[in-house]
Length: 238
Image (cartoon, rainbow, N blue to C red):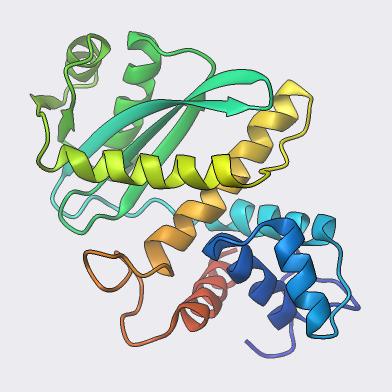
């Protein structure tokens, strides 16, 4: 990546490759404390708060690469309850069922037909989706009709891809401290950047167990090399 650092990753005493390695360790499954300890064993003295900030900077940049077009104009949509500190919120996600790539997400304080409609409308306008596959929840039929989408209710099959992604994401959120600030607005902003970082890692870096490579990543590279490639792409478009 050369010696030039992107403005959001610039720090005089921390080389970019160290930041990327710390981000890789965290998104691979280590806690912030474990990443801090791993860096120290390599003679790199950085706090877990510094690592947390790097992750959120990476997440804010990753939004620009996080939402590819649906390859076949079909999206599987699901939602789940998450906890941001003591506050309950709803996470909506959409994936492409053919390449298992994550397409889009939103976080809302409530779950109803209006929040479903806002998400489905964005899928149609920004990502070219024309068919949505969901479970039998009552808020989807009207929301899909208003968004001018064909609605398919399915149990199992391709819908299981979204359920697995949600469970994988929630396991990661439960297992480690996501460090959401206490104030409500900052908590939502922090959640968006953290989830963006993890989902970019899922799309472009992490080896998918079923596919044997990331949904949108470069197959021949190892995971850390894919992360470096991803950051180069992000820097190129910002």
